[in-house]
Length: 121
Image (cartoon, rainbow, N blue to C red; front, top):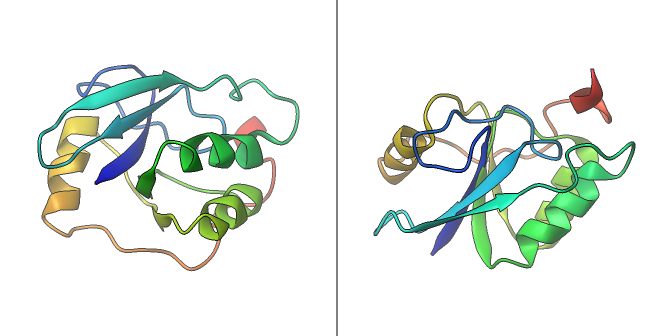
């Protein structure tokens, strides 16, 4: 199973990026083996549509769960439509987040946690 963690860097030692659509990187990881792939988020500087395009990018990677600080309404809708579980309120080091995820410390959300375009502020 693959999970996605939003990140400021491209390693497991990087800090979680609190934004989904405009994060610097997506870390796609297997929580059982800790094998991972870092994806540069080309949507981070978009003037609009970053959440939707980032959601489409992640849904194409076979991810089952996204862990991030916050998620806006467009990203939430895109991820939810793809059947991806969304967990927010995540912070700290990516590797530690994966461990906490495996321990069941995060819960799914049922709606966006920030307004549209909040990552631009």
